[in-house]
Length: 349
Image 1 (cartoon, rainbow, N blue to C red):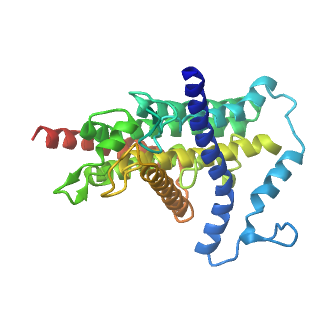
Image 2 (cartoon, rainbow, N blue to C red):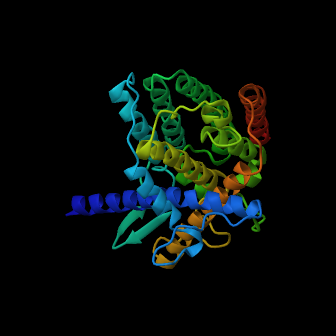
């Protein structure tokens, strides 16, 4: 009986994560249009309707899904069939898997059983997230190579170069957070941010590691392959690793980018914005209301981070390939190493 309950709890946590990430990724197709419209002083998506109801364009993601499902499924004659078909699934799978160790709450105690509000509990959960994000580049590389298109291959190579520089910078930028809170487990880091300076100022990662937060956010945006780091799919240069894809396969690559955006927002929340912590509200696993508020606080912070990432996407122009490489290797990485040294010195003192 205990095993059945454990399996049920595990399934519920995975279902919550999958439902939250996938639905938010779908809604972001609408958010991107509407937010850009507000920033550019125009109306934005508002044509799709059901029974005359438009609801601010909220039916556009549904119209997009119908269009992608019914569009012609094209495959180049010289494409490597098996790898061509597998590439979009690889990208989406690893993007979704990345959210597994991000805690969306502390602990809920029900009937003497403690339920950790984290789909997968790992002592090195931070490393797992970035391993999953870095594995996603295999889908991009497979798409570029299997398409038998030189422009697609070039886009895949650019994505691989960007991923290497971004992942190294991300890994170095979060080392300061791990040093301050003494753990590689996102749950323990979130709990560590529940302490206070002088009983007033919460010790959130954005305050203990401000430089690390800026570096992480910059490298995280690069890892999502979105503007200003979108040169793996630079339309103005006729470059794109999914240039030969159509229909739902094309949609899966786009969904992978949105899901990666949600994962980066989730990691930024867990490591730098206190995770599920609410200032001056202490965790109580027996109080369902407190646990619900914690989960709500985590979701709200993720939504705010996604909004901020969208703001950057519609504000900054895209980098040239050489500029992005220079920023990653000669800008982000040295600053991340400097942040580690400064953090170590402060901890020793």
